[in-house]
Length: 150
Image (cartoon, rainbow, N blue to C red; front, side, top):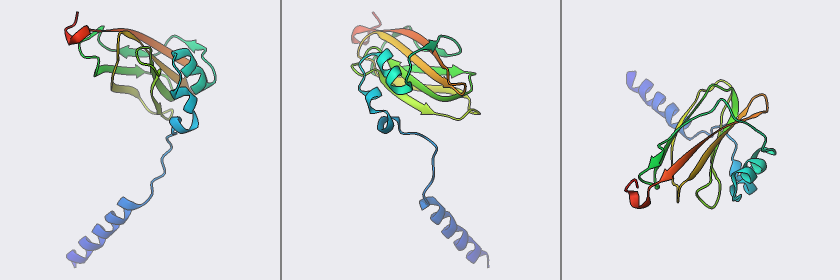
């Protein structure tokens, strides 16, 4: 009897593993393709959110002042704002948009990402609040030439 229960439970788990899952995430590359082609941060923000009027508060960015390796720059993003999305932009590479996270108002904004930066520049994080306002924070990062921190 225990074997039958085990096998039926295993079949149920296998069926659930292949069942389609509905996610609430938005694919910003499909719905806002022009934002991913923008060459300036201001243009990318305007094409992603329809406005580039930012409130410079409520966003904490932690990253090294000097990145020894521009190929993997660690960036931590934190905020207490109730938000719809979090977007990361940079001025070092040809296209400004890096990533966008769709979140719900009850989620904690505490992300850690690694970015590739071609040269020294500024990272800008924009949080779209549930109030419709755009909150931002920026951090300048110097990329060491040749990975020698100098």
